Length: 468
Ligand code: ARG
Image (cartoon, rainbow, N blue to C red; front, side, top):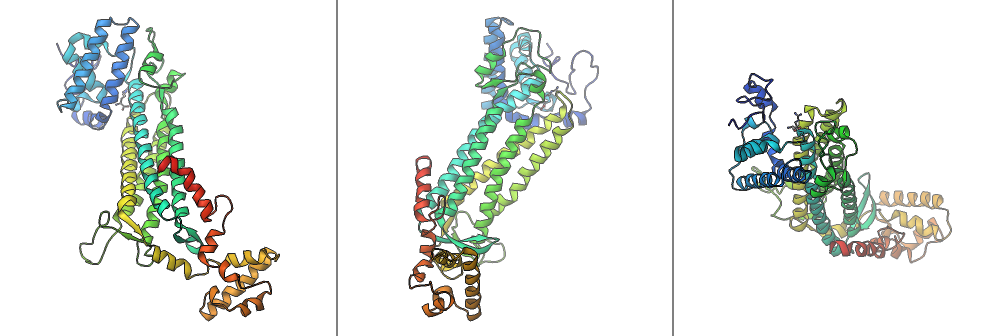
């Protein structure tokens, strides 16, 4: 028996009998995906087990043949677990590698597995099974990241941090409020991935090469067996759809955007200029030359790796855009992109979670000092006058003048004696000093979703059941 008969087009064997010569060795290497699609081995075995079961139930093969095929596939799984399944380039891809080994194990019966199936619907099935599982892993990693943020938020409800717009001091915030903004972003990431997951979880198996099959297969059965929620309604669409890969990469890109923005903040928070956080030794690195250095490599790497995820999204879109229906070999390029998007997102989420868990300590004394020494309470002076019936725009102009005056004299608003406040507007009373104290400035912002402590406490309460 020639085991590879008709199973692969590698250099040492033949395709169907229309082929007379083997592949050029360089082309064999160029064509092969086994080097990376071996990642899909478990899913390929799962898909084949479900397919073999269905073939038996539909009497396309006998019940006994179906069982033997399944046993053979499970043997391959065990061989792989023991490190004894190492297909070479001649297998071309994971699908052929499995089929080839099955024929080695079972003889002619192994040749029945591919009945009513093509590698086109097979690869689509494998990839979706794999991605579904990875989406669940990313969801778990996002949850851990949210929890790590939440723990700091619980601790720092009453810690103040300068709030910025244009990276200029704007208004002080509760640090918890700042951190909970990232919890919200990660929450949307999780929702988005769940939404993508619904479309990933649709079964193309049974579309065969492109047109379906004349054999009486049961697509619903394999789909149910593999835990898919639905079936592709159109066989051409089934084998040529890679929207799910793009959608997933877009969702992962947004995860990376969020991680990268937080990274950027941590990087400058850790600088001596800000000194809002201290990096612990667990997640920081030194310099090979400058002994005083402690570098924020983790957030820098996360920020840096963001680009490659965006790159894969762009690569996938470009790879697909000119393809006629149905399967084209170009699709083989989707795998390394997706594998890297998944690996990078998971690695970065884990690293950021660890950074938050044990890599940074906030410095409340520094934060406190920062908010106490600026003009980020200027809006509150205007709001004070608004409460005394001064139109906002008029109050705004007036306070602008006040700030200018203070800047010229090198003092802060709280340093102005009451008589000078009154010179500017008779509405000012002694209570202006309380109104512009940073803690009061934060506490007062009680509009829904605002940074007022009572409002932030509400946010904490909303997340606590999920994250505490
Ligand atoms: N290795 C291929 C891929 O990744 C599997 C499908 C091959 N199908 C084909 N008709 N050549 O897309």
